[in-house]
Amino acid sequence: MFGIGTGEILIILLIALLVLGPNEIPKVARTIGKTMRDLQRTKDEIRQSIDKEFEDIDENKKTPEKSAEENKGVKQQDRLV
Image 1 (tube, one colour):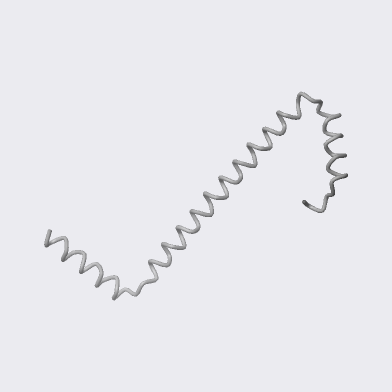
Image 2: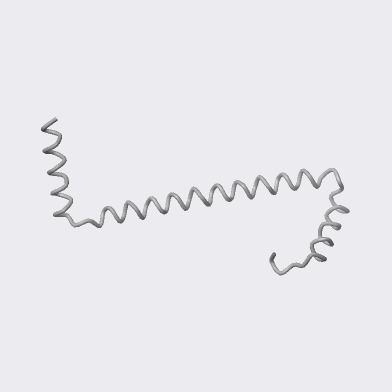
Protein backbone atom coordinates (compact mmCIF):
# COMPACT_ATOMS: atom_id res chain seq x y z
CA MET A 1 0.00 0.00 0.00
CA PHE A 2 1.83 3.09 -1.29
CA GLY A 3 5.16 1.43 -0.47
CA ILE A 4 4.54 1.76 3.27
CA GLY A 5 5.22 -1.22 5.47
CA THR A 6 3.43 -2.37 8.59
CA GLY A 7 5.93 -0.69 10.90
CA GLU A 8 5.47 2.69 9.24
CA ILE A 9 1.68 2.39 9.44
CA LEU A 10 1.89 1.60 13.16
CA ILE A 11 4.12 4.61 13.78
CA ILE A 12 1.71 6.88 11.89
CA LEU A 13 -1.23 5.53 13.88
CA LEU A 14 0.65 6.01 17.17
CA ILE A 15 1.49 9.62 16.27
CA ALA A 16 -2.15 10.23 15.27
CA LEU A 17 -3.28 8.80 18.61
CA LEU A 18 -0.92 11.10 20.49
CA VAL A 19 -1.83 14.20 18.45
CA LEU A 20 -5.58 13.72 18.13
CA GLY A 21 -6.38 11.71 21.22
CA PRO A 22 -8.58 8.66 21.51
CA ASN A 23 -11.84 10.63 21.26
CA GLU A 24 -11.06 12.33 17.96
CA ILE A 25 -9.73 9.35 15.99
CA PRO A 26 -13.19 7.77 15.38
CA LYS A 27 -14.53 11.13 14.18
CA VAL A 28 -11.60 11.57 11.81
CA ALA A 29 -11.99 8.00 10.55
CA ARG A 30 -15.72 8.58 9.91
CA THR A 31 -14.99 11.78 8.03
CA ILE A 32 -12.34 10.08 5.91
CA GLY A 33 -14.73 7.20 5.20
CA LYS A 34 -17.54 9.55 4.12
CA THR A 35 -15.16 11.50 1.92
CA MET A 36 -13.87 8.34 0.25
CA ARG A 37 -17.43 7.09 -0.29
CA ASP A 38 -18.47 10.42 -1.84
CA LEU A 39 -15.43 10.41 -4.11
CA GLN A 40 -16.22 6.85 -5.23
CA ARG A 41 -19.86 7.78 -5.91
CA THR A 42 -18.81 10.87 -7.88
CA LYS A 43 -16.29 8.84 -9.87
CA ASP A 44 -18.98 6.28 -10.74
CA GLU A 45 -21.42 9.02 -11.81
CA ILE A 46 -18.81 10.64 -14.04
CA ARG A 47 -17.89 7.27 -15.56
CA GLN A 48 -21.57 6.52 -16.29
CA SER A 49 -22.01 9.95 -17.84
CA ILE A 50 -18.98 9.49 -20.08
CA ASP A 51 -20.11 5.99 -21.10
CA LYS A 52 -23.56 7.37 -21.97
CA GLU A 53 -22.02 10.14 -24.06
CA PHE A 54 -19.90 7.61 -25.97
CA GLU A 55 -22.99 5.48 -26.60
CA ASP A 56 -24.80 8.55 -27.94
CA ILE A 57 -21.84 9.38 -30.17
CA ASP A 58 -21.78 5.81 -31.50
CA GLU A 59 -25.50 5.98 -32.28
CA ASN A 60 -25.02 9.28 -34.13
CA LYS A 61 -22.29 7.74 -36.33
CA LYS A 62 -24.91 5.76 -38.25
CA THR A 63 -25.09 6.61 -41.90
CA PRO A 64 -27.68 9.31 -42.70
CA GLU A 65 -29.34 7.10 -45.33
CA LYS A 66 -29.87 4.33 -42.83
CA SER A 67 -31.22 6.74 -40.23
CA ALA A 68 -33.63 8.21 -42.77
CA GLU A 69 -34.83 4.73 -43.69
CA GLU A 70 -35.31 3.86 -40.05
CA ASN A 71 -37.25 7.10 -39.45
CA LYS A 72 -39.41 6.42 -42.51
CA GLY A 73 -40.23 2.97 -41.16
CA VAL A 74 -41.16 4.42 -37.78
CA LYS A 75 -43.40 7.06 -39.38
CA GLN A 76 -45.20 4.38 -41.42
CA GLN A 77 -45.76 2.31 -38.29
CA ASP A 78 -47.21 5.36 -36.51
CA ARG A 79 -49.66 5.90 -39.36
CA LEU A 80 -50.82 2.29 -39.18
CA VAL A 81 -51.63 2.60 -35.51
